[in-house]
Image (tube, rainbow, N blue to C red; front, top):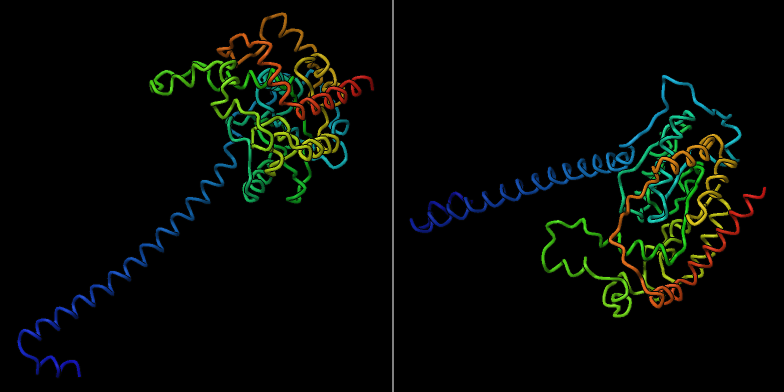
Length: 346
């Protein structure tokens, strides 16, 4: 019927109908090509996401220190003496930033050679949280692929492996006086490693803490209850949003519970000797001989301090303002200190 109508139509109409059909066919082909292209892009994107997800979860294993094969371990202790019930035997130092973690990691690397285990150091320095369950599960599954005699360090909020049907590692950590940590963190983020910084941004880097606290103009100087901060407590409380809420009593109590249940040792930087002594006593598989190494490091001037911050003298008034706004953190600090003292006596 379409052919007859075309023949009977005037010449200009036949040309119009023919053009319309061409346009209609071209439009159909274009839609088909677009659909195919979108499908291909979706498949390629999905494959890229999976590859990125897999490699991302394994990227934490870049830096490893393995035991020396030339010399036997200096102090190999039976693994059974380390592993408490419900632990998978691997050591996880989910290190709180600006709490002497570089020094402790340096010691772990030396102990790996001395005591015959492998240390794995994560290159991720500023990714403290894994809020998506898929991210958490991928991290857990990747972590348990490491040999049992492995220590691992990364800045990461507490993660309960049992949620993903795996035993938890042996958790350790270290904290410090909350005011001193706040000051150190402030200048660490603003230290002069900023060659090439735009002129308009240099003012932010040059800010001093006294002025920042007094004016409250910058986000990292506002200690407002209820706001979300990357605080010390979240490294023990977990990835829930409440754990990062400043001044949260719920986060404090949850962090205490997690410490008692999952952390073999949590030390304090202000008494590093006691911290190392308790680590050696409680976890000899990994920390046997650490006091000797620490003594040698002190005498040789090898104490690690990667911070070397552009620290200025902070006024007593500013310190008092900071301290008054960190009451929950100080309650946690006192809890950890008392626990460590108790451990050192048993």
